[in-house]
Length: 169
Image (cartoon, rainbow, N blue to C red; front, top):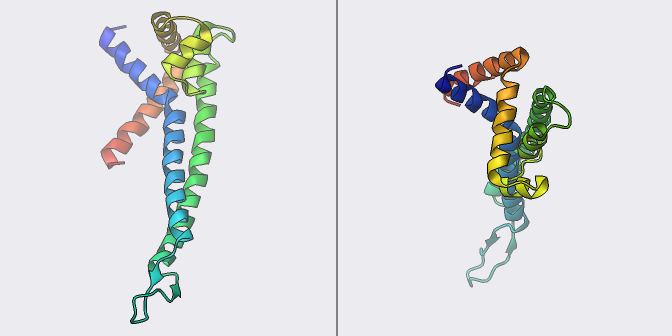
């Protein structure tokens, strides 16, 4: 296989395997937005309708009503994102099941893409330095690329990526 083609296939496989991590990141962002909106709703604006400048009481502004709607929308998005995460992790596990069960390659790929561990954390868990970890990782990617079913899944994934990028998503 030509080196450039192999690099491209590895890139697509890595992107496929990192879909769970990306979904988790999107969920964290949505949850942070939800916390911000809820904090804003907890502290409604205070009006000072008396002429002396002293507040007469608090009220929920029309902006707060919009925040309540936004809160519901974000909660729906979070739920959809959780479903996306569940699908992503199942997809990744299906791909990684092509590797031998107790192989170091599978172990490192799982730590990286299912447990979302950093390379430093992986090296501590498997008791290897970064270089052998990368070698096992690359060896695992290359082994996965030898399976026809994996290549079909990745071709479909690449088509979806290209369609999304073309459509501007």
